[in-house]
Amino acid sequence: MPTIDEILAARAASKPKPVQVTVLLDADQSEKIEGLEAELRSLAASTDKRLSKADGSAELEAQLEEIKSAPADALVTFAFEKLPGDMWTDLTSRNPARPDALIDLNYGYNLDAVVQEAAKAARGGHHFAWQVDGDTNIVLTDEQWDAIFESLYGHDMSAVRDAVWNVNEWQPSQRLAAAKKARAGIDTGSN
Image 1 (spheres, rainbow, N blue to C red):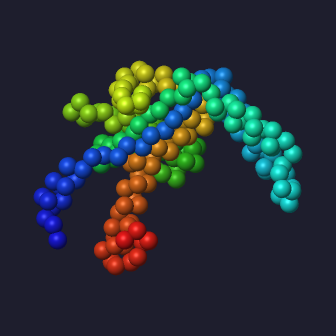
Image 2: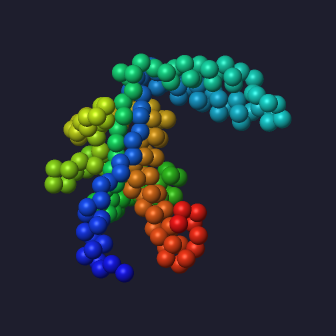
Image 3: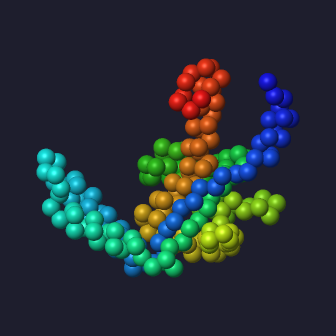
């Protein structure tokens, strides 16, 4: 079994794997996408499930695909890297759950506030979130992040929120569960 120093050295040498998410920062297009997605959800909820396709849904899906093939300059990709554990727990402890937000009550902290702070987090000159432009990573200012979060519509904000939560909570918990199963000799399908 490796020593704690060997484990820490291996961890320090490993390259972080950021999660990328692409959003549409075109207000008109984002608003249209959000409206069409809401119409599709409404149709799905109110339609007889025995029918093969809800009335009008094929047309709505075609409109949605057409809008999603928006000009490339309206699409922006962000990358989010896992924060060190002490930074993540500091963010979650400083942003208590809103009593009227079910998602917060589920996680135990204000998920939206934590995500916004995580996007701005830096330590020793290293930033944990950035814009990806081809092969170039662009570090954004706190003011730019604020403007981005103010301009995102629901589906894009959810995509960003999911990416930040995934890289900081979900992926580490899955790796831990897999490691425990591997140590116990339980087949996880990947070992």
